[in-house]
Length: 394
Image (tube, rainbow, N blue to C red):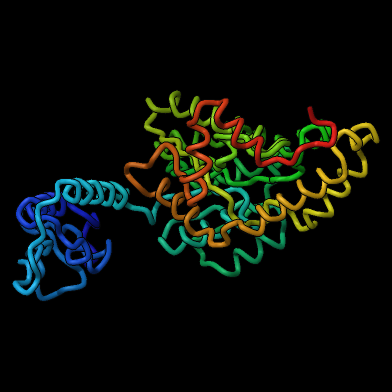
């Protein structure tokens, strides 16, 4: 079905579902979503559009979204308005999420930070979708491995987002690749998480190291790529964090992510008239290489050892051990399945209706984002109770 324009849940889906909900409330949703999102699409025949099912060649050209009559052996439940509202809400969201842009195989995507983690997996997913991926890696080793593991649709380059000359070279390379077509999507994914800890334990250099990668580098890459994105009327996808909505840890990480949020909001409003959409990814706690290879405990011990004796006395050894243990526990509880994040990034790239903000992860949805929306004194009270009490506390 090469000429089928895939639109995985069509208007007929909504109308048929609405009729079914009204006539037979509540519907068992698995009866009409039994084959998942790939069952419905549209095909043009003659002068009209018909819904067809690619998985059912015997019924091509016939509307397939039919809710079966309730089995007589099953008692008919009483009408439930809330169930109807829930079903309709689900159908609307499904329709919006599955509405993808056309000609993806012709579109270019530039992704930073592809050595590992989110960027690496996203690059592979987009290649599998048939898109043209321009992957920027920090190391030669990472670039070679990614190139070997994928297809001709992926090309790699080296990029250090803290160096202007490296960014300029990468921008020229991208320009040579995309030509007059322009760049469909820029994905600013490169980032670091450490050094982090109590702010008083850190130096200016600790803050600058993180902010230069997560914020300043992101801004400079964006500024160099924007003319190409505007030409394609494409997308900018910026990797932020739940830590960009509520500061849960000290150091440059949350500071930089708050900056990413502000920068993304401002360029989204400025680029609206050029047809460019800007999305922000705000994942919860996921297990990636953002923390580096050195153990967290070793980093914390080095940080503690360099503090003046007066500062160590004010916090106390017990504070150091409890704080370190809490950070270790947080890292151990980090979600290893990162596909939820890359699926959000992919949706921001391929959907006709990308969201402004994505919050992958249960901890993001149920903890961090709600904390960010509470009155500040309430958030302060909750988060301060998580921290240990210093030796010199009042």
